[in-house]
Length: 430
Ligand code: COA
Image (cartoon, rainbow, N blue to C red; front, top):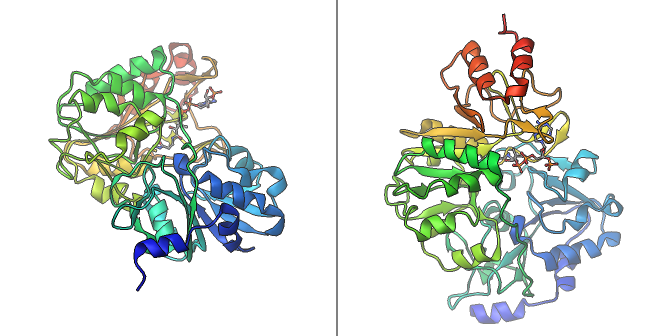
């Protein structure tokens, strides 16, 4: 049997040669977010005139997402569970398809036959001395897509950090290697304004020493982190994290010493941020990465005592129904890990879940707390599962409260300019 070095050298090819393996009618899975293998997605997209009806599963295209360009419509059909800045328009114009799905249940789409993957396009590190390549910053659904695909094409990128955990594929598991050291896609740190800072302070008051945190996407989780500098022994079990955690780890606030699952390890499925973050996770044994069917499984999450989930929303109605991924009929993002983590936190001993949102949108002209969700909006988190809602006007604890009590709590944290109208419009106003 050939040694791994011979196999590796024998399978090296150009991006153009590698994507020739994609045929009309295939389903292609693309590595996630900052780990998009741009040499491969570019080469695949360049072939569009030769291909028809290729389905491209790519959960969050923050890179180029060329396959959703209008001229590619008959050639590529994008499938996703999360709309992003590059793909939102195509989804909302009907040129791409949105699949509602909890993140914990995405990998089983591939393994249980609903979306069988013909070709996986992934980014990996160069092989180590044992012939293992790391998936680096994105294990998420990418590991399961690669494990279940008929053909695996990897862009070998020396800029991809080598991460620890269930992140490794052997060169024998990969069919083609395209060597190209592109810079990874980056997401800058979000701007934190006064509203986010005020909410960050309220949320920090809900976080006790020794808690394990999940943080969603956006400015609010970053703002919270800046208020946690006086806490002790915090842990992390989260779908993703960004640059904001680095300072808290370096200062010893996050040490994971009280975690009841994977103590002394930060657990995540992907990271997303700047090159500083990518450098920090490189060969860092404190960060342990696992696929999402594990990290986001509520039954796994609940094994962390004092689990606190922190997520955001677009709109909340007076019953406490949370809209975080669509507004009216417009698909804005996706459920992400929000509900997985709310469920896990609910079952965790001492756990709590927090939805934090600014009280208004559109420069203060629209209240995000509303009597009824905009018609057409999909409920992301139901009123049965919601726990704390936080705005810059305070904290509403909804779990266990009646509809009438929720109405009062939510109006008390709405922007003062809208409180009178909210009270007037509600069925509980009498
Ligand atoms: N009415 C009208 N416009 C609204 C609105 C409302 N109720 N709520 C938000 N908007 C607008 C904002 O003004 C903003 O517009 P702008 O870009 O022109 O400024 C835009 O919609 C985005 O809102 P914002 O609150 O800034 O979004 P965000 O980047 O902080 O993300 C979510 C918030 C809810 C979209 C995001 O957290 C998400 O996708 N959540 C679902 C998934 C999830 O929770 N995952 C967690 C684990 S990964």
